[in-house]
Length: 321
Image (cartoon, rainbow, N blue to C red; front, side, top):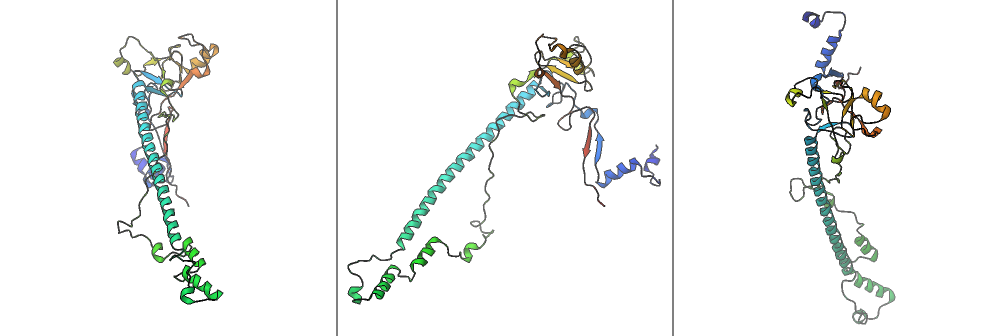
């Protein structure tokens, strides 16, 4: 189709090209694009550096790493975890000291409240031998009670009123309910620091997200296509490695597996048709188990999934009628 035919808008049919063009310009609908070869990592490249491995190691999940790169990653993550743990312990110690200070201040407040309540019970000491009889003469029972009440409660408060004021059940004043002034530094609200969670001591694999250890890494030994070539000439070739048994060329389109005892890389076809019958490593002669056969993950980078036929999709808002 010519350029004039693609840009023609006088047709009676809404073509697929026009639909994609309108979708891209409108901002609605799901856009998809097929990733090219440059967006897919080669099977023999490190998942961190994305470069061909010189000293490759593989995890039990089948992800290939350069030994130096993965060891630097593990060391960096352990250093970060140690820093986070130190900050968490510091926060824990600060919380403990603050709780001790709060308990001490609360005890002091209780003592002060007790002293205040005890001091307000009787304002003046009463001598039971020299009561108001000497000044007022003989009193009746009712007048004696009134005098005793006046001596116990000089401010005119009764027993119930005193207990009510001590219990703090009186309604608060309007000044205590007023909001703080945001323009006065002493009355502005204070934000509490963010509490840190206890960090996990396990280092996670950057690809699978599962815990990874240094002693779980398995050395991988690729079989070069031409042993006479040096490394620079080998990396410049499109086809670099072959199966250790069948000598088939390895690539992203060929599923591979790593044998744990020898670290050799063989194709999945060779694994299913030859090795699984006897379950013996053809290089070292050791007995194999299902755990010793590690499928090698193909393709995929930090920006895309694994596989060789990838499509990137972006879900955007959909227009509703």
